[in-house]
View 1 (cartoon, rainbow, N blue to C red):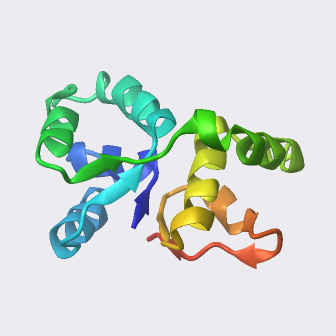
View 2 (view 1 turned 60 degrees about the vertical axis):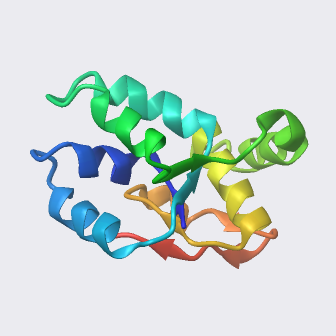
Length: 132
């Protein structure tokens, strides 16, 4: 599965309203979650605000639960086209990277972001989502 920032933070923050849901997903999925650097930047920024700070993120990365497997440099033409296409949504760099990852890896996106219901990959297909 490809993972967005929201479920990562919900998993780490026991006070998050989606914590139980995220905890259940993390306990049921046996394969690593794939993500990108843009998501990790957001996650580290938000993790500073929760009580566990960034240690939980270090643990997820150190144990291979999160795999950073995307090159923005290589995929920039596709990512930038996507951002321009959805400029009225608006589409963040992180969202555009995840959509491109969904195209490349043909895996669902684990997210709390409602914009993913609007986004399409391969120009017209709905992105398979896992969300509460």
